[in-house]
Image (cartoon, rainbow, N blue to C red; front, side, top):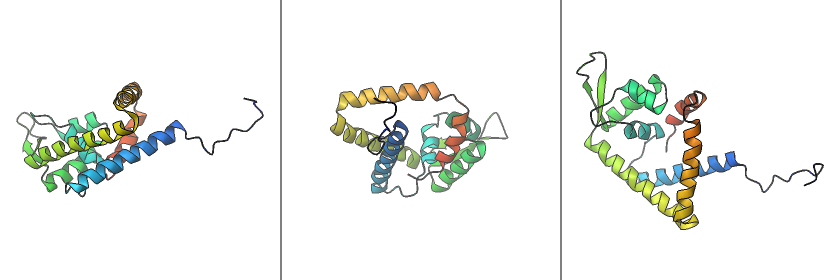
Length: 166
């Protein structure tokens, strides 16, 4: 291409824009599916909390570290989930200053429904690009995410994303 010829960007979608648009599509599909099952006020952060629980319980501090959000943001999400009946808090047996969080039956049901939603979305994407290409896309994105996952600059962005409604 001649270096003096201007590039026509009108029909070109940059990778960053494609990733943002695909994220919004997934978010919308997930939200629609979960709302159809009666989950009205779920935030992405709620999902982050529930996905990072451990059978033996976990502290809010450990959840915040694992999810890479501030303790304040995690505390807010945890309190919302406790109020809604998705989590229960018990005194920590070794540390009287903290509590252990556990999933309730309602929380476990949500996680089951979330897995159904994810399977539904993957099925819809496979119908468009095929199962093999979907697996390849998943592998490529996993490589990129794992490369950048430990960067500190990503943590402040995660705090903002955690409060976003699905």
